[in-house]
Image 1: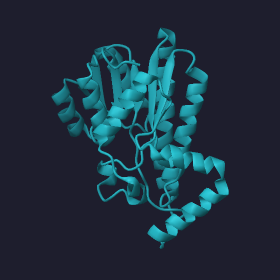
Image 2: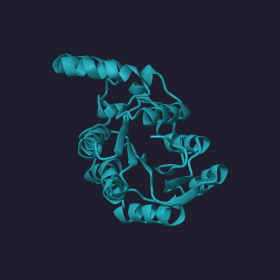
Image 3: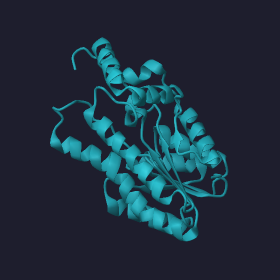
Length: 255
């Protein structure tokens, strides 16, 4: 799908990948770019530089997402592209408390469900649209030091697959973005093991997404080596687990 003249919503749009997406879409001639974020001042500042619209939004609340879409439609027109980008990480394994599991589930998984439920019916009526989920290479591989992040990003990839299967031949382009470490607020203290393969700038990830949209790709992997790792995992799961155990022992001996 071409970005030019499209109405686009980006959640988590004030920082990191989301901000880079907003800037990139504006450069490519989007008709309207809506910067949705809980960081209201950050969203307003970015929107002011790209002639966009800033909308406060807590993606863990379905009513916020509905309001976001209605406001966009009222002020900009029907939503052509929805980038369900907002996400968080919670570090830890089985010791992570239930409230943190619930919070990351709501943001990293349910926010996509709420958005798809609210925006895809209109796209189906018009016969066109794009729905993009920012997942992670952790959704294909693993985030060794975060069980909640791993579980929710796997769920996000599975949801994207299901949306593509059910709506991809009905005019809706579904894509899932699966980078490894990206320079952002989430990785401000380092990218951990994921950064061993290099940390990309958010602008590069945004450019890769734009190219993937133009090509109609489902799976967008800004770090190309992820495809090789994923293929190795599928070819011999037990060998892959043993390799990941060795990786953990070398770099995270205390986990």
